[in-house]
Amino acid sequence: MKDWTKLAQSINQFVKPPTIPVGIKLVSSAGEFPAKTRRPLSDLGFKTTICVSIAMARKYGWTIGLTPEDNYCPVSELFYGWADTPGENETSLFNFLKSLNYGVNDNALSHLIASSTRYKLEPGRCGGIVVSPMELGRIDPDLIMIFCNSAQLMRLVHAATRETGDELTSVFSGRFGSCNEGILRTLQTNRPEVVVPGNGDRVWGMVQDDEMIFTIPGHDIERVVESLEVTHRAGVRYPIPIDVRHEPNFPPQLMTPGPAGK
Image (cartoon, rainbow, N blue to C red):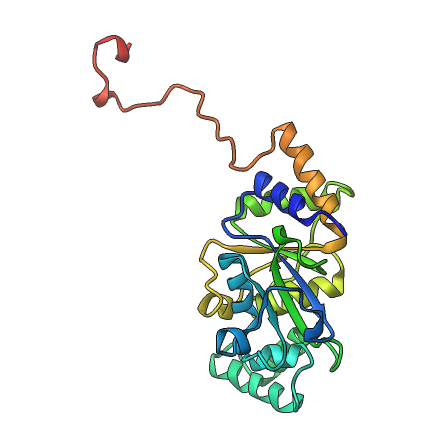
């Protein structure tokens, strides 16, 4: 098992994300949850969503284990294969998106649904999900999720593309961000992803206006961290070392005839 604590420390040193980088793992049942896992329904007294579970992990430092019994979101119920009647969930999702005018007509909405559900899991594939601070090392995660600003995201993209020199390409919808495009798309593509948080992430998952999401498959984390380190040593850093080594250009009205103005 990788030294997740050390890897998390490196991310915090070189990227300095505002909240805790979290590891995420899909499990077959709650029996695979690590010690000290909090279950929303039994331990916290309420059902919740995947995006809120991520928020609790990255903001509180908790390890959260969510199963279909803990889940309150009908959208993730559909995406994760937890729906008893997936056809009804899909119809409800269609009607919900239609009520928000997300598509110009029914054809556009149908295409939107098809593109949004292309990452969904088959029933029985996933019995639960664990979200845990990477630094705790409680799980061997399928992927790492980091919330960051655009400059921090730039550094992560630098690191993710250093080995091959290829560009990093992502697909953006602005919908179903962390649970679908963040987790499920990363599992399907098996490569780092840039994700625009969705409206649900912001309304319920407390994602801030300046935050983006970057995901890294667990098997890729050491390569990304190494690339962060070597580029940092070369001078490509966060915070950005802004060049202030120059004489300010003050307006003439401010200047005096004394030594400072000469």
